[in-house]
Amino acid sequence: MIKKGFLSLLIAFVLFAAFLFFPNSWIKAWISDEDVEQVKTSMSPLVFQGMYYQERMLQEPNSLPLYGSSELNRFDPFHPYNYARATDAPYTTFMIGRGGMQSITHFLNFAAQENNLKDKKIVFIISPQWFTKNGMDELHFSPNYSMLHAYDLAYNKDIDEELRNRAMKRLLEFDTVSRDQLLKTIYEYKLSDGKKRPVVGRLAMMAGRVQKEMLEKKDLYYSIFPRESHKLKSNDKLVTNQTFEQQLQNAEEYGDKRVSNDLMIENKFYKRLVNANLSKFEGMRKDEDYTDSPEYEDFQLVIDVLKDAGAKPLFISIPVNGLWYDYTEYPEERRQKYYAKMEKILTDANVPYVDFSDHEYDPYFIMDTIHIAWKGWVYVDQELDKYWEQQ
Image (cartoon, rainbow, N blue to C red):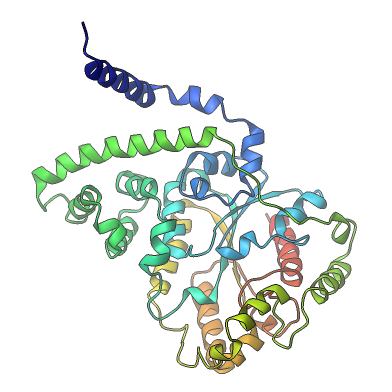
């Protein structure tokens, strides 16, 4: 008679084997086009930390993905997703980004999707607050980090080797990566061109390949379960059959109903600042400088991987809320140096870009202290239309 403990172990083994060896094509067959459409606005980490959904969205011929951070989930009637849907634009959008995502996490994502990026038009929104003195910190890196993307990087034969090595060196600076002994061993083995601990390195490479395949399988299984769409806050009449000037006016009226303070911050957010003692923020940024940051090297990785993939990116440089930054005593002159430096980087890289830095004091261009919305989205929407029409 088989003991219950052994029977339980046997059942667990069978289930694990079924999980591991169940054909990927069968799993993919359960994921519908409706599921793919739903995740375009879900902003779920399971989407941007995975691969399958992004592959499906990037392979759509008319998709125009937007990459950035927390501004992407500030939905309002003028948000690019709402705009493209309501105006029957020749493209559709999906968003990859949330709070804390910066260049290095986007680099990993782009590297994992190199095969799907050739000749693909994409939009990358650059936020000034990324470029702090210390750049990306562990607190923001860890929750946005994709283990799947990090393992894929080590085995990616499509990416330029020098670019991959630069990225692996940078990733090893994060505790989240260096604590993964298997991945750390693989990266160090690859960086030494197979000379560091060659036997252990080769064993790690074999184990890492199994780990990567398991992570890919896990991503597929997670993709089966539907993701809840974000609340869009749509109002099609504000953009449908409206000229650019009419949309700007609608956005100003929309913003005017939501802002009634001298710092031009959305009232509900301004109330939180007041409740937290607004005066304590006065002068808080007087020593900050966005022109000196390790983020610039991370951002260069993004530029280089998109070039390596043959993608067609449009970079959008957005401003801060000038009134708020004046209040926190980050001098306008110093902010202009950041904008000028970013413009030079993009110009030297010979990539198309849009610079909105002259909208710092434009009412309703920024909804709070840093996030683009309302009027800002109207300008972005216009640039997306022009960009899409270009050959």
